[in-house]
Image (tube, rainbow, N blue to C red):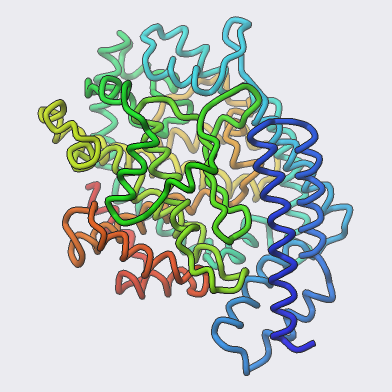
Length: 522
C-alpha cells in the first residue's frame, strides 16, 4: 500500500469511527441515560484502539520520511502521528482511561448540589450568586457548587497517575509535557508568555479588583478585607461580579437569544439557522448543564448544546458557541477528513471569543439588539465591562493553567495548593477550612479535557489580534459581510492544513502577539 492509498483508507475509517463517538456523546449529554454512556464508552474505546494500532503507527512514521509527500499529505501524517502517539498503549489501559473519563462526564451531567437538603441546578446556583444579598445563602450556594469536587476529585487523581504513566512510557516527564508537544505548543514558551502577561497586568488588575471589592463591600455590608469567593458572581471568579446597575435583565427578559444570535451572524453573511435547527438549547432534567459545540461528522452536521435563559450570560454563551459552529460549518469540505477541523484548538477558541465579546460591547447593543436609546447612558460602562471581563477571565485561566501543570508534576497531595494559586493570581481571600478539599475538581476540564485550558488565553490573545487587524484593514464596524468573508476565507477554510502560526501569519501578517490583548487592558 502506498502513502496515498493509506491516507484514503485512514481518512474514511476515522470518519466513521469519530462519527460514532460524536453521536453517542451527543445523545449521552442531551439525555444523561446510562445506555448512551455505555455506547459512548464502546465507541470511544473502538476509536482509541484504532489509533493504538502499532502497525499503522509504524507506517505513519515510515511515510513521514518520504520526501515526495505534498505539503497537505505531510500535514495529514503529522496530525495522524500526534493523534496516535498517546494511544500506543495496551488495550486494557485504553479501556480504563476511556471508562474513567466517561464516568466523570456522566457524573457532571447528572450531579446536583444541595442547599439545605434541596437539590439545585448550576443555573440556580448562578442565579443566587448573581442576585442574592444574604452572605450566608451565597456561601451555601458556593459550597453546593463545590460538592461535586469531592465525588470526582479522587477519580481525577487516579486518571492523572494513569496519564503520567502513559506519557513516561513515551519518554516524557509527564502527561502535561506530552500533550503540549502533541498540540504543537512549547510548555516553557507558553508559561513564559502567561507569566509575562500576569506581570504586565498585575498593577491594572489590582486597581480593577479594588474597585470591584469596594462595590461588593457596600452591597453586602462586609469589609473588603473580609470578602470571600462566594461574594463574587460565579463559583470560580471567572466573571465580572454584578456590581453595575446596567439593566441587562430588562433588555433580555423579552428578547429571543436565538434570534439575536442569528441576526449577529447574518449581518456578516454567515447562515446559522440550520445549526440552530439541529441543536439542543434549553435546560431539562438529566441534560448536561454546560454548553458546547460539536461537529458530528466533519461534513457539516454542526450542533450546539446549551441551557439558554434570557440573560446576558447566555447571550454571550450562544454568541461564543456559534463562533465554534461557523468555524466548523465553513471549513473547506474538499479537504481530507484529517484536515477538516480548525487549525488549532485555540484558533477556534479565538473565533468563539471574538464573537462572544459582543455581549459586552456597546456597538452590539446598538446595531444588533437595537436598544441604543435604553442603554445610551451606559455606553462607557458596557465597554468598561468588557475590559473587566477579559482581565478577570485571563487571571482565572492563568490560575487553572499554572495549577494543572503542578497537578501533573505532583500527582497527589495537591489540594492544599489550589488556593495558593487562587490567591496569587486572582487576588482572592480564601477559606482556610477548604484547603484540603477537592474544590478545584469541581471544574469539569480537569477530568474530561486535560491540558486544554491554556487554549482559552491563547484564544483571547488571538481574538484581540484579529480584532485589531479587522478594524485597521477591513472595517471599523464588525457587522459587515466583508468581515464574515475574512473569517471564512482566511481563517475557516484552511482548516488544519496550516499550523496555527502559519494561519495567523497568513491572516494577520504576524504570528501570535500577546501585546494586542495586554494593550487593550492596561
